[in-house]
Image 1 (cartoon, one colour):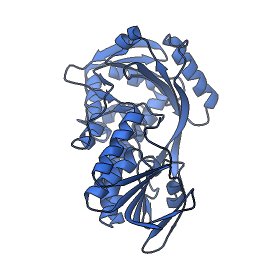
Image 2 (tube, helix red, strand yellow):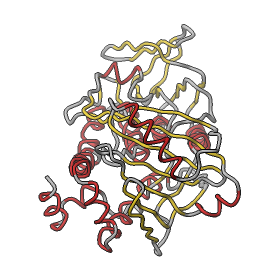
Image 3 (spheres, one colour):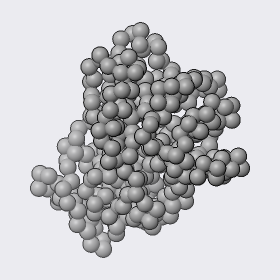
Image 4 (tube, helix red, strand yellow):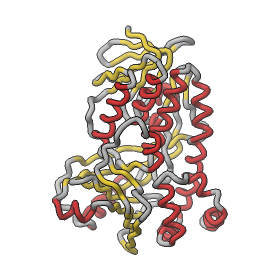
Length: 371
């Protein structure tokens, strides 16, 4: 049995952020990743300013495109485009490249990354946590950070509870040079007809990520939305490089973030923004908080930090999602106004959170009217 100060289950943004911080704090740190980097991951891959700030000084982000304009449609109609002249709104990455860059940074900080090492079971007592791997070997650690997704073994061990589950579907489309030029620097957001749904087109050089998301339980309507969306965009004849789906899960307010010496971060903890379902910034930040707490052997510190820094943003996102699900056209109209576009841009650049936005008097009044 190998013995460590901190063991991290999962080699995505949350797990590798935890490993980077824990190893940098001097803790003997091991990452257990069931796949092997670089590996494909279903994800829009748009980094908002909050994510870029969390990465400052750690990696050179492998940016495939920088977005400065956004086209909005409502069920394919009422199209308008806005451009931001103050700087990029989003940085687009491909998750295989992005996660692999995070892996290199974690190893440079002193962590060991063990790939093709799937964790099957967790057992713990007052002093140690034992992880049993698929090959029958075991790892012991003083603290464990679970970052293996909402369906992973660590979320089940901790007992994470979710009150919002959504189905996201994506295709990765290779595109010829004329389409590369047409989409460069611009993304598209389409508000769907299913309550709370929307679609997106994210450019990544010679590839477009096209996807839709809606609440779980509407599988066929969601698949139809994606087919019609791709067809409407004139992209139906392109054979996808990847065609995949995934469930996103948001935690309940009282869901646990730890059980004994096992902490959960990122998707494993159900930490993401409920309206946009943006998860990378939550993964990077919660992973770093978990890594610091695990290295310090202070799990209560992690619970307090998440409650102070991340949970209020999720509550604000829930309020926005509830209003958006009932009145998507009102949101569409608001984004066409100068104040609405400024708010959108400030969120994308990381200059303002939804938590701060919903406390502004005009927004509070608007949300009250949209109940």
